[in-house]
Image (cartoon, rainbow, N blue to C red):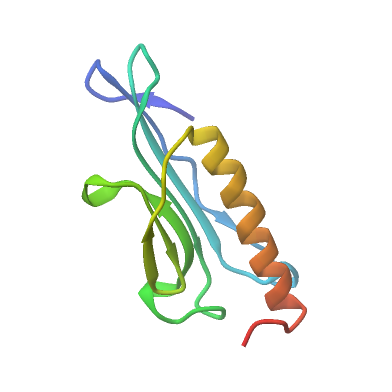
Length: 111
């Protein structure tokens, strides 16, 4: 549920989502900060954490954020710049990617 921080920002940080073991296990994390009232995204972080898939980077298999002054993607320990269009488009991409990774893991396709 969103809540307001200083009157100029809104933070959305739902509870972490635990992925059932039959779907590969792990945790999904999300945090978004928007300016108020424009709702422009100023900070964001999405992460799929599953130490069974990747033990480095504190178990972060996949993540997107704009910390450190630029938008970037984390994938199994590698960080690459990633252009930002909209948060909604990024969220959809993240959903598709983590689900594909989890499916590959469950099916034994990841080494």
